[in-house]
Amino acid sequence: MSYDIYTGLLKSFPLPIELNMKINFIHDNSHPKLNLLINNYPIEDIAGSGDDFSKAKKLLHWVSENIYHNGESGPIAKNSLSLLEYSFNKGIEKGINCVCLSIVLTECLLAIGLPAKKVFIMPCSPYDGDNHCVTQVYIREINNWVILDPTFNAYFNNEQGDYLSLLELRAHLANQEPIYFNDEAKYNDEIWGTAESAEQNIEYFAKNLFFFQSSEISTFDAGNMPNNRIITLSPQGYDPKQRRLNNIVYRIKKSGDCQEMQTWKDNAEKEEYCYCSILDFEKKPH
Image (cartoon, rainbow, N blue to C red; front, side, top):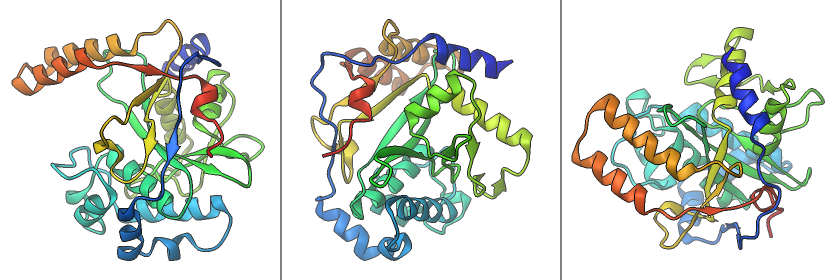
């Protein structure tokens, strides 16, 4: 039932093909701290010398198999070096959330020269307290972006075996077309070995693919870069800012008010939203 509702929303609210906005996604691998990442961790050896997808897939598995997911990641600097030092091979007690896992994977991919970006995937309802975060990487051999999810050690295929981008995954779900996880997909130590678990997780992605947000510049510690705009890809006529404000009010109602929540709400009211089209979002990188 929920699958039909979530996929129905995707079908009813398509994303805009063109908008008259000046958007320039940049995937910068020249930050000196990315060289330090390579020196401190064997990511080049892990990636190996195969094609782009082979390298990306090996790094996905390396991150997922050595870092646990934990929704409470603590006051850690949100860059790969700090997050790896905190969590790598440290067990679930030092696990990190989906945003931090995507930061680690994205910066590892950038460090070996693959264009990549962290993307928030967002639900429609303001009464939904959950969203998710993944990585998109550009694979030159297929001239396309591919979604990688380090929380679930996952990527996606269609019936023909093609690797899917976020927009392709959204379109497949909107049309209720079959999609498939890779065999290694799992959550922490829990392998998705049943049809029921696969169905539940496909529904989870259908819920969270209503709209997307990503930094315009992807590089080391991109979240702390001044003037790095957050770009939103959203159905026309839908108001992501109002959704965010309503969601904060909902959280206050459910969990109680405090100064932190009021500060969050005040900052959200001041945020300016910059929108892109699907052509901008999955444009071939320079």
